[in-house]
Length: 274
Ligand SMILES: Nc1ncnc2c1ncn2[C@@H]1O[C@H](COP(=O)(O)OP(=O)(O)OP(=O)(O)O)[C@@H](O)[C@H]1O
Ligand SMILES: [Mg+2]
Image (cartoon, rainbow, N blue to C red; front, side, top):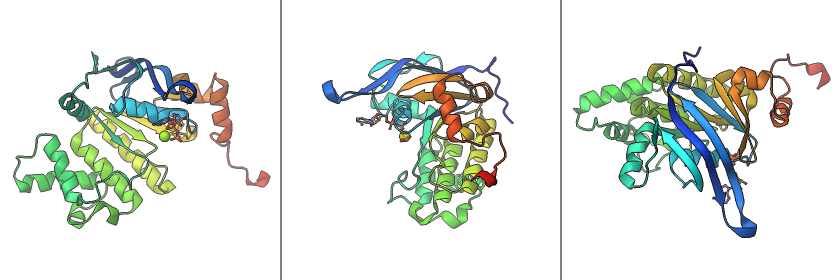
């Protein structure tokens, strides 16, 4: 399935001691506590942890949406510099995200063609003739099994949750970032759409050697889709490594507990005991 080779893949997003503290004094919350990571080109990484373990806070720091309290982040082998609006925009050409709630991801007043045209503009294709732009948007839509001709003139809220999430992936197809951060992108859609979305992410990764950082509370799902997993508990990585190793031979008690909470990773469902 994966062409990712941990021995040859170059690092693309690396962190040392990355920490986020919210509030002060008695109200202080250490949401992310000195985490180290090394995400590599073409790698499918899952960050797994329970609610409140710090996954979204970490992803916001990775995206540069909130400041890092402490620690360093390198992007493509260089210290990440997002100190100005211009530099941040440049950084976002390399890292994009899709979020939990496909209903909240769009500007309500933007029609779908405007959303996609915006992506073309962002990648320097704004000057192309309309014909060519329609061709590119049609291709992006068909990549995610949507028909562009049926979408023009519609608003994102006129689509189903699964369709909206696929439209998000069509955007990524056009933007071609080095890294895609997906924070629980499938938790609000049905199981069938979920596997379609994951298949599309895998396909996209193979096409453009994109790194995918997939955030989930579902360790079973992480096992099936990822090369590498990072297990997060109370803001710390308690265990990380190849998905097989971490999940089939967990060392941390917390990982074991997460696995026990999804009782049937490798067993057949035994309905007689239910
Ligand atoms: N803006 C904020 N101000 C104060 N505390 C915050 C803020 N954002 C998050 N936290 C706290 O940081 C901790 C981690 O929250 P975070 O949203 O990162 O968890 P999560 O792993 O994404 O959880 P979930 O699986 O429920 O999405 C929680 O204790 C949360 O209450
Ligand atoms: Mg979250």
